[in-house]
Length: 569
Image (cartoon, rainbow, N blue to C red; front, side, top):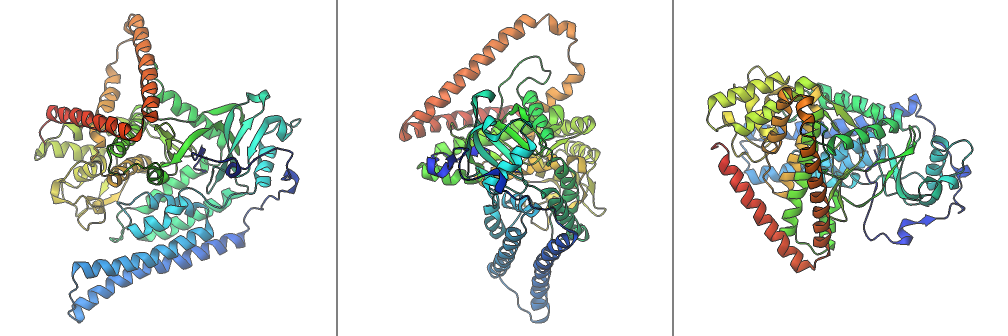
């Protein structure tokens, strides 16, 4: 869905193109595009297959060519020469795929977003070529956007001007399903600055047809050694989730549900600090195809490095390192709490949906895709986190325990896989700080000796939870920060498992005074933290860098103390 309800900093009035609602752009001039006909769907499928099949075939052909050169002609190339050949192959494939995505748009844009965020999984040529699809695709015209709002949101006796005092002509972001505009509500509706998410007309049939094509091409490749994952299973799960993205009422409910779970302790007894900033829907201004919500100023993560350079921040500076850790911490706490505590979580994380706000906080947007996993799987996943965090390297009993828990989740391993494969997969997925894997497996996903190659199937109930873990792992790899999800999630997991033995309500009621005092303390802490953050942003660059350096050293010292308390690895 639209991936930017957040304004870039330093937007000028001319760039915003905010205009009076009596301007020349009229709702009557808008034409709604018709749904795709059967012929149109067949044309899209043919265009996709005519590009995708040759790209895949070229890789098999190149691999066969290299083997024949060595077997028949005795040509033994060096690693550097082989890498040059594959780099050239990647460049050709990336250009063709990018052109096809740009032409077809639809769900292929969402697939491109996933690929561009996985620099540790896909070749650099592909991630670079597809990175342009993270933020924007061609937007609807202002007239069509206003027409959709009028048809889907307004009451019968209302005009556009009754609800919106300002409407920015240029969208903040435009993606495969919807686009977002900055607006200002009239005094009747509170007079506040908001973001309005507007669904593209007739987009549903187009996207569902696209994902059917992706399923069709990935199913025959389920057992292909050239691919590191079972993409057919992934696309099946995404197909289920995609159907929910067309209902913005359901998205508003999901936003509130996730906000409520994160803003209070697990048992709901007390407020707690939100690990991430979320927009909230505006009551009374939500329909199936239009969603009005909070407006958040910032830039998407995909443009964070560019923004740092504009502000003169060295990517290797203490400020950049502190930002990297704060980013990983925010994502880890958000997804850890949602996945383990309630099992209900944001299921479409990518750099276009993660924002760096103007005040340095991290924002998460686009709740069109959410997932609910079962209580049994949550409990087993919590046990996996604790087992990974408490393990001792070389301890066979620990590895056996981890492997059995992975199998209990529903992970299926190939018949000829090593006995250590289940434990190695769990370690690879949830502990990015690990340097070795049991069974002698390699950490790299593209390595022929990767434990991922031993996967026969991954439980669909956990595909999107795994996607969140892989996103955080990819971010930590790209930022060069070793990060163990299992270590960070283990305390949350312990709290989840302890809920079965939680005190009775009578015992809790006797502690009400203590809880209220704690609430006051938490409120003061949040206020003080916000003031410190704003103060830090206002400091001169040299002083800000010095403060960041001190903060990084404090975090390092704390991490070392925690490592000393953990079992020796």
